[in-house]
Amino acid sequence: MSAKIKITHTDNFIYGTAPNPVTCGHDLSIGTGTVIPEINFTLPGMEVTADNMPAVLAEYAEIIDNVLKRAVHLNVPQLLVEFETLPEMTTNPEWGLKITRLLADKIAECHKTHGIALALRLTINDIREFSRPPILRSGKYLQAMDTFLAGAAEAGADMIAIESTGGKEVNDNALISCDLPAVVFALGILGARDMDFLWNRIVTSCSQNNIIPSGDSACGFANTAMVLAEQKMIPRIFAALVRVISVPRSLVAVTAGAVGPTKDCAYEGPFIKAITGVPISMEGRSAACAHLSTIGNIAQAVCDCWSNESVQNVQLLSAKAPTVSMEQLAYDCRLLTTAARSSHEDARRMRDWLTESDASLDPQAYVLRPDVVIEISKAIAAQPTPYLRTRAAASATLEILRTAHTAGKLHLRDNEIPWLDMLQTQVDSLPEDENELIEQMLNRPDIKNSFHPEEYDL
Image (cartoon, rainbow, N blue to C red; front, top):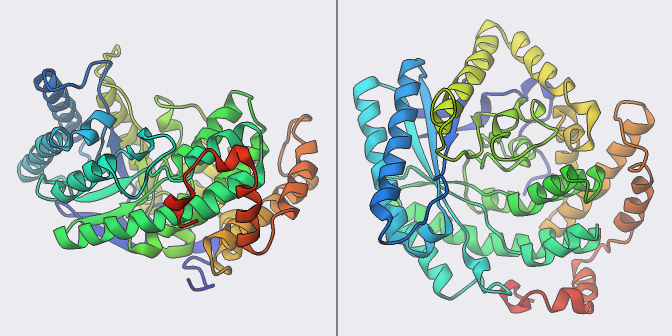
């Protein structure tokens, strides 16, 4: 990777516009000046079984009909629909492909009838972690994912995404104990190696089937840290550090050939956009239906698609929840587009308001400041390997957070302040040679016994 990043100044780091836009589906262009709503939905509490598939299909038909009807009513010009599979729909790929076909047909009909630019993103659930420790490069779970992937284009999907989980078996325990070297090992070595294996596979299949490889997400890593911090189980400053050191891992998808938009739950998206120029999808206050966070506004500052994460098809006072999310996303995106059409200065002003409303209140928000993202992205891109990028990300992020706190630009709770020094000690302990860290980790029984080294070429 070149040490030069795609976006080097905040003047050009704005929502709705990406250096490398994507066109897909039914005339949908992403990153060309308009923020596009991305609607995501899932089933209410119900069984997903062979006997219950007619009811499952009926539920998805109701969801997409209501969502598209509301989009038409609100004069939404462009819409990205995401179908994120449940585990049963991936272990039985024929079920997931039936749902994909149903959604794709209704999307195509809406485009034909109403002229809305539309596309369908298919996010395949990574079921390889169902074997413990995970078997990542062979076996029935990978075979089921491959079958789903191979049939996705024929079923009508326009792009493929995944929230891959390689390295998560090590990361989970490391998060709880705030063990930074183990997290770096899980993300910068294990996760990055699995991403290389998986995304070269995905990109090859997408190329063969004329479908877009969009992106991955470190949701199972960094978003888990965010939720744990929200529950006061780990420090917020540690969660912020994990957020940024997940970037090099997710970057592997793009170096393998993914072109965006990145996944909505990938809060590492702004860094990926700055480094590579691909468009990104983000979520924030609109995703409160799925999880709580302290980054509800700043997450929108440089997004190209704006998502609700996911919401169950349950009845609210006004309508079913996915329909409500559709309306909320439509209004959010309309406001951003109106500001951008007024002038580039107004778009930057809107971006800065979104940024400043969150940035000083939580380290997880501060690291998403556009200027901070660019500074850290330069440090990441300057390194030649995923591990060294992860190490550089940790060092640069901690230095920026310390400087911001000292200058009064970032509020840290009293019980968080000592973590600046504790985490610095852990960052300083990271060796320059990744083989040294690998040796350290393999000599720890708690680490060695939690994963299969051969699944990562170790």
